[in-house]
Length: 607
Ligand SMILES: Nc1ncnc2c1ncn2[C@@H]1O[C@H](COP(=O)(O)OP(=O)(O)OP(=O)(O)O)[C@@H](O)[C@H]1O
Ligand SMILES: [Mg+2]
Image (cartoon, rainbow, N blue to C red):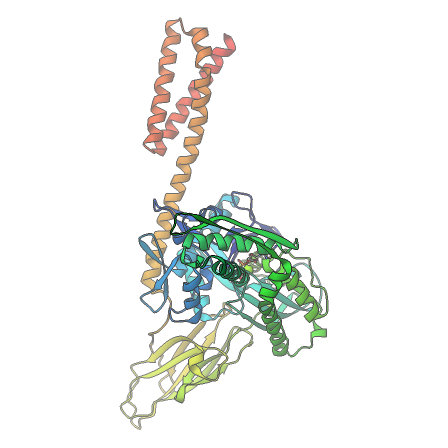
């Protein structure tokens, strides 16, 4: 049976899980950590770094280190979120060829799905190292509030990483699956997921028959730990400016150090009441002297700096309840997900709003990946004892005359779903109809997210000028939208051209997949070389250590001199193979070295 991994592709951290039998296992990376920073960097030598190793070098290589790429995925260049990210990022964000966003690292530019694919590929490798076999299939999670462009871009990222993404599921829904897995109860629950970059809240009914039904979901894909950090950074930067009239934001390295210090302080303040932020030599003045930054941040101050952010999450919870048409008393359990829910002020706000202590039975960092793994296993085993009914987070519709938004599929409709609408050509000579498909909650079309411009072409010229075209709008279980059209009279399908998306073209994806594959081959061969080199070096050191003893025992005999000379030449050959980075040759020398070592040991034992 083919296996499937569940990947929580987070803004800050990613996590991978798999079901072993019935038991979900969170797979540790080589360092033994169960989550891996979603950080990607390119070194001066052009080498790609992902995870902890990339995070560790972020300060000295700030311009070429990408974090929080998820905040940019599937967004258009001209969106306010991208403008905001440009102001606060230490790496450079530029405009792509499709009105999309690209990231510049060293001399190359990367699309955002490509950067995310590097994180996904790393998670795939972590799983493969653990399982000792290749993994192809994956379920990847996304924030429930992600729109179609963001979902599609995440799916593209999976494809680039060489994964067959069998399903995209919503993070809070995944969390509820993990929470309800193997338990036999009927319960209405709220999932409150505050991560590094996004906030989601979902209200679900979990049924004893294994049905997980989402009733409502809402959120903010630009609200998370990053924003809490930004408040601390502002506080530090402004204080420094007042004291020294120097703007630390102008210095990328200083900004990266501030980011690290702010996040660290925030996390510490979840367990202590005050903490010292100490950044010596943060910047040098024009007069050749270095300035230091030292301040004490208390939990009280942090809470004041961020109380509106916490309040926004509470407002969103209120909205979710309203959308679900439920009273707060009807919520029987509140599940906390995401690292930010460790903040006491967040926990207190949630407890106050729901009028109950949140459930602490799930691991906030791992539960989403575990849910994805559970769903993945259920999908490939084709099991029917677990049914997941999710909803679309945004209304789907089209732009009509006067830039109005005509809603076709309302928010919180269970997916998969579809609606049809009939369009009529109006003029006699009309052979094309343009349809703008959008997602959003505003009555004004321009406030909503444009998913694509579909032009129905090749329309038949009707004798009386009126051709009726039926257009079907579908949202599948991944929450991804597709549109089909047919001529009602002839039943003929109409061709649809997509002319405006921020996504990648099929060709671009193909090229990126090839690059990712090249990287994998290179990385595996690097690893093989490193492995062989280590083995050789250990043997070489042992042999070197035995020489004096060998000399003493057999050095005067001819056969002894022969053996010693041969051993020396083997060592030389091994050294040359290592210098030449020739994995095959190193492996050959390892065999020789082992033989030499055995022989030396034999001599020593007899002598
Ligand atoms: N002890 C703590 N106190 C406060 N915040 C914390 C603590 N531990 C982690 N965090 C914060 O939690 C956030 C990361 O949470 P998490 O790993 O759940 O996010 P993510 O899954 O990467 O992001 P998202 O789900 O938004 O895409 C970071 O902002 C981190 O600083
Ligand atoms: Mg998360």
